[in-house]
Length: 225
Image (cartoon, rainbow, N blue to C red; front, side, top):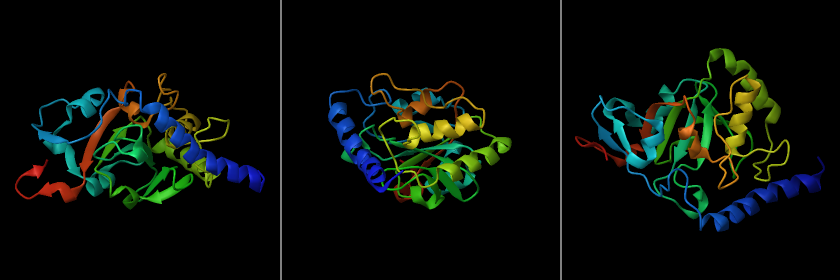
């Protein structure tokens, strides 16, 4: 890739985001038109259904922890759906606008608008309102090939063009699934014509392991609001 092509690809990310924002103004927000989050603690016997998590926003007490604790408890290979509290200009998909993967005990494998494909510390997500830890079928035996793919793709810019060999957060995670012989974990959203991060909650077989809420919102004696 020459310098001109590299620069053009980097520019396409913010341009693509701006285009999707303008289109999205008239479209339903994934998932199920959720615009804001306020997770509430419920009894432990309540079933945690991924497809209703964003609309009902109720989490069994034993599964609701702080963001750092959720990231620490997340097993390597699990996906991390990262959420803001509301829907802002910078997260036009809706509050849960990014997906990463815990690739080892201390690092995430991801790509994002202000960065590039590669590994980043878990602490990069500490400022989010919430993180949702998901079991998507990746196990220890899949991680070595995933890590090789992470190295192969390292440094690629975030790119929303859908050209071959380009990635943004969602199809990047699909690619890691693919090389490990696992099914894609986020389907193409027909309305948005994008792989929307929060649509991972609608994928059959996905399980919610933990919901982490920013501990700055924790009140002693009251629990997470």
